[in-house]
Length: 244
Image (spheres, helix red, strand yellow):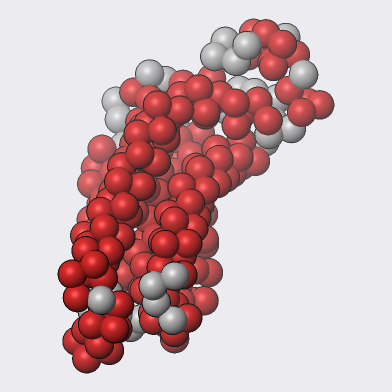
């Protein structure tokens, strides 16, 4: 019976669904998004590497002391090309992960699995957040490792904390993108898209490095609370709020 409820899952996974909890959902989402995840990882690493090469070029030509002086006097961080990369990566992951659920009527099948639809959607969102967190963490590790031998701890933190706001924006873009994609009506979807654009604009109101430091904990909490919005779209879907 469980196997027939969701033909997208392999037979062995569907049979053991109750025993393995969220693992079948994670596996299904990985199969659906694996090529995008690898491409996103390559692109984010590429942009991160490009920013680090810019820093390395300054060090080779002018010396590390000159780099420190420029960062102190001009408040430069040299990683500005990275600013919108996490945002785009998060939004595209939501599109790749959730657009097929609506366009190919997969969501209806998913919601018929022997599991609470709230936990099901939470598992799907958790997968996306984990993938993005892993991708972003690898970029931070790359930046931190490279800058460790070039910048003192204070300047290194100056760069990484500035970049942290951009990467939190990437998580917000993912959750808001899921909200838009899972919305069952086009009229409401347009409204959700407009609201999402306004909310994401908050992350880029200031271009001053570390401008968001006092609000970062609150920003993270507010970002994670956005996970409620896709659940609202799914509840509307289950209630039959669909385009005729």
